[in-house]
Length: 81
Image 1 (cartoon, rainbow, N blue to C red):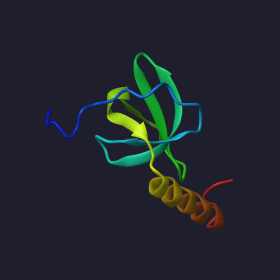
Image 2: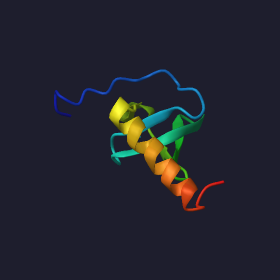
Image 3: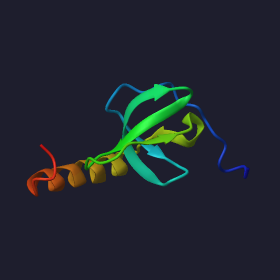
């Protein structure tokens, strides 16, 4: 592991918190925890995926803004309720 990617475990987020899966380079909503894995859902809806908590960090402001725009666009297209 390189020195600039030292995993920092964040506390378990509240449901719906936007986080970034560093391993997959994806932003998703925190949906829960089971058996030491965190479950995340794409902000535009879709299938959840699981991630190791050490690979997840809170989404930064720019990532939250992009996720909000993606969600609003999906809703306007009728992809979300």
